[in-house]
Amino acid sequence: MPSPDAAPPANSLHEPAQFRMVLISSLAAGVGLLAGLVAYLLYRLIGLFTNAFFFHRLSADFTSARLNHLGPWVIVTPVIGGIVIGFMAKYGSSKIKGHGIPEAMEAVLTNRSRIQPRVAILKPISAAIAIGTGGPFGAEGPIIQTGGALGSLVGQIVHTTAAERKVLLACGAAAGMSATFNTPIAGVILAIELLLFEFKSRSFIPLVIASTLATAVHLQLLGGGPMFEVAAMDFGIPHALPFYLLLGGVCGLAAVAFSKALYWVEDQFEKLPIDELWWPAIGALGLGIIGYFVPRVLGVGYDTISDILNARLALGLVLVVMVAKAVALVVSLGSGTSGGLLAPMFMSSAALGGAFAMVLNRIFPSAHLSPGAFALVAMGAVFGAASRATFTFIIFAFEITRDYNAVLPLMLVSVLADGLAMLLMPHASIMTEKLARRGLRIHQDYETDILHHVRVEEVMDRTPPTIPASTTVGELAERIARRDPEVSRHQALLVVDGNGSLESIITRGDILRALDREPSGAATVQECGSSKLVVTYPDELLSEAVHKILRHNIGRLPVVDRRNPKQVVGYLGRPNIMAARLRRLEEEHIREPGWLAATPKTPS
Image (cartoon, rainbow, N blue to C red; front, side, top):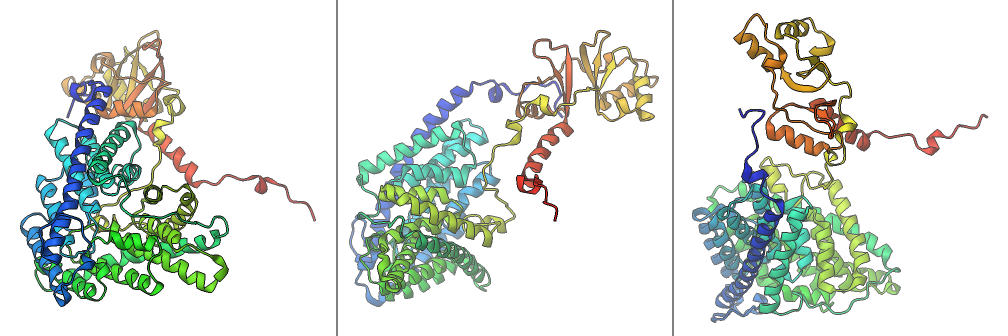
């Protein structure tokens, strides 16, 4: 056990925070550029596999798989990819399975933000194979995980703390999202909401740097337009607000349905009496059958999303796409293959919003609702509610349209959907359900620690337990034995001289050790206590005091006057710290009488 007076390691506590900030920001810049490049390569790799499997040509141009002319052979094509993914997962790394973000979250929570190098290689390749053979996935989840893996690897190569490595992992994830969709702000917020669970300068600055540079790479290699083509929309504010309220409830139910369906399918695959190596192939067979009848479910489907957002599809086809894409997604992803959730859920939820508006226009012809506007709002609301990253996808949808008129309906529908999803799934989301099943509970709410708001003087004991320096250990032990209230209720006592100046501190352990050495207890408490004191000050934040307690492995701190360190003004122990926590608990749960309750009743 470290000595209570042991100084903290110099490299972790005395290195200037500004230097670490510059270092991590510089590393984040490199991670952002690298993640942007990897996103571009993955984009091209998907195009390469799509052209090879569906059009039998050698080209890396991004092509929609729905335009193929394979006929019945389209059923077999996804199965080939499923077999390859099964072997890669079994003999390469099981971390390639799934849509990527939960795996990045798990690395943060359980492995101190360490991701294996093989994941950074196998994940994008497996995703490109899965999508290139018709998988109904997006590239964003895999590139988020791959970008996170790159950031983690940089943090493992360079000497960093676990917290700094977490920031670099989040920088890679944010950069991957930004480089995929050309949405730098949403990329930053996604990393904050799903990976960092903090909003501090030490993380925000590197995140913005990485996201900005990754987007710059996207602009240079893929052009400046958004991933989806979106024409000008009429959001119908304010006359359409009642319909948006109804849409919020529908989106919340859809978010819950997606989550429940995905994990139900996973459970069914778990019950299969065959090796899990073959599960992706079975899921791919189901996808192939669906894709034969509804080709628009094959591949990423960015072109179909654009068609829905621009209201180019008839109601019947929109409904077919909505159901078929959702079924194809949960069957394929539930089988344990590799691919992202965002694009397929965007397609199904956009189809949901578009169909919602079309149906209401038939019921209420005077409503004149824009199917494209409702599709866009639903696209952000469903995934935001399902992932508990509502703010991210409000911003994401806004960045896609770059139309400020989209903000009001996006905010309203998204928070209503999120609220309903929280009521129906209070302890998990589509991102955290898998982790919850492994025993990991993730607290996704943001609040400032009460210890950062309370000063020591607000909770300290103002009558510190002091004892004269001339008192013998035997006398003190006898007083403790007969439960003298002045000394028995504390685990440590402050030793003061005749003038009341602080000289040392003596703990119960010090007393026992002194009696072992000299059973008579003739030594004074001044001789047996510790004179190398760690102290705190009345105006110091409680968080700073707690940091001292943890850093020096001690249980209490003398509170002294800052101008006269020998003058004791208080005592800070664990009960005092818990009192601050109790204050926050009371603020959260104890109701105070309001004005109405205080109004006296008029006598009858």
